[in-house]
Length: 286
Image (cartoon, rainbow, N blue to C red; front, side):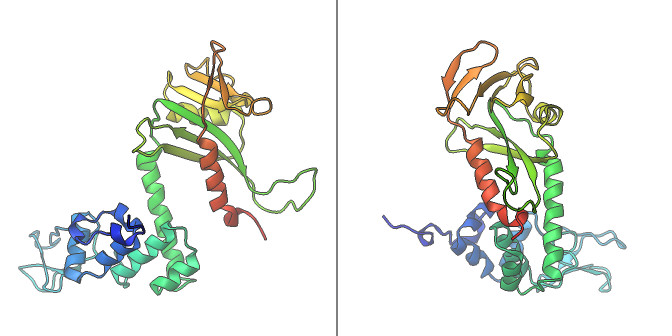
């Protein structure tokens, strides 16, 4: 059996999707295409405009031979850049460099390394593009995540991201942020679990219950630890199972309404641990 990423690459650009960019070979195959094929690929996926209308003549415009300008058939003075009304509007960088910068940032590479690999200024252009990406993520959150409803089996847990002091020893510097996570377990192993993570000011009852009521409908099953903020979930109409980590290490959860116990493997703790590991450099002062 041949292992590695190279055998999994896709040679046909038309069959490539964003998920295929996880493979470096697939990414560089589409980046090595001619401008005409690359622009057509971006247009087919909604990243470049496929249609443009002249604002003055109100007629459909046509792309120039080099595919870089939209030109009006009535007046040659009316033309627009092929980047108009797209994610790349106003930039003078090649689209390939922008896509490379975005891919590096999504792969958890530092801003410095991402700017060097794409040829951007570290203190100027790359900072603006990273800020632009965060704005796009915020819009995506408001449109898709903010109103997301989780169904079925839901796991919830909270964790502190930042420095901890035991016995009042060690430095107290560094930011501390409480994270509250909700994970929807998918019964289909081929499909990924859905997870929502909120930074919260505190883990008190009003804060956590507000997030739960926002994303979980009454009647769904919730697994949690024995934190007191979750004590009223049963009265709110949820099937609530809890475990006290102080006395039970086998994930034996007890239903609050009936007292029945069952074993259950918790995934939300693993996700929060991975999230904390990836964000240590952002929180800790060294």
